Length: 549
Image (cartoon, rainbow, N blue to C red; front, side, top):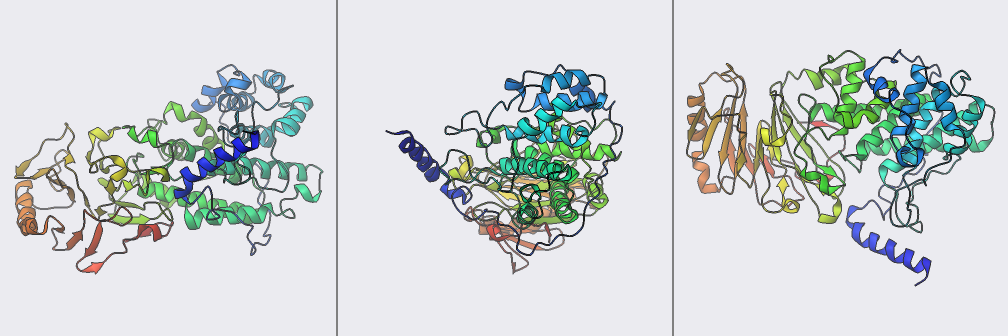
């Protein structure tokens, strides 16, 4: 078998494996330059860097020796250099380190036909060194600057790279690699153009990159992210956008980037409580088994962004394994909108929101308020669709950091068969018993029903559960004037007739009637109707923008 025959065979296997995603081998997610784009001003080029030299994130990186370039160049080495330059007490060490260095690998996804890939992970933090200190000869010597610009930053020119290396041009590159690589390309072009090379190739306006970026950012607003909630990929995607946002000098493109980041933060605000969440996600299915909430990179990026504005106190600390993302978030010029930040930290009114992730992907549904959040865990279109469903989870303001310490409902059978979309206002249901955390004791119970008062001395907030081998139900009642015993009996009385209907209907305390179908296809929302009004159950058709119901 020749080299190219073997290459074609590998790509063919990948195509057959990933065809259900509608991403890698179709034009569904292809970015085409925005024909309606027109230049609209220049963003400020003045970078007013706050004094972060003594920030614990800076100290974390600055206090380390610069590690080996070939083994640690992907994450640690460039961040240690940034921090040391910010501290200003190890400039010579950084400059000597940069001399003679060459890329430790190749750009694009690291896989069988592109071994030693992933170099574009390095280019995003390297851009910070260039953009912050490229004009400062007290920080960067001319030889170090030259090697950084002309050898270590490899992306430039007018052609966005959207194809996986080694795939014979057939397979689309992963989303995080596109965002990282094209951020570096754009910013290097901009730097070259603003420092004397006015050729067409490095002019992002004339070479089409501004129009291409506008199309890419519009795609994220209209479709969302393919790698939604992905651990670890979403962290690299968002820090790439934070880098782009900080240094992009096109006012219109930067404003569009702001809109994308604002939408990401709004979704996080609605889908989290106490700055923690446990959403369905795409890619790295093996990570679905993680039971803690600390693996979410977006949570730690949010914590760092909030801390810059003093919106959270020093006790709110990101997890150490996300310090590499936190460094970029700390230095970026992006600010979470005030209303969104307030929603993250001080939910007052109850809400129900939904949004989609496009074809062959589950939607997300959240019901929340000041004291609770019920999140749907999604579903999996096929095993090869790279989606990972999670339990329907009830978050409370109790500081827990593990799913086992939360009220939650798993799915029926093996996880690929789970249908975890049964969330509506103050309500969650699935075809599996309710898991009740050990720290909560029932205030009262009757048959399959139990009622809890999770908040000490708060007799106006109740969590009710109904749990059999085939059905698990969680219902939250807030601002209630009834005792736990009376609330439980009233709820049982209102719903006792539903046994003849195989638990397909639930009656709220106010009399609203919710119809649901636990046998619904994985591609449809389990919720059918409310008071006879049919719901739009085709979550593959839901908008990617947050919709309040």
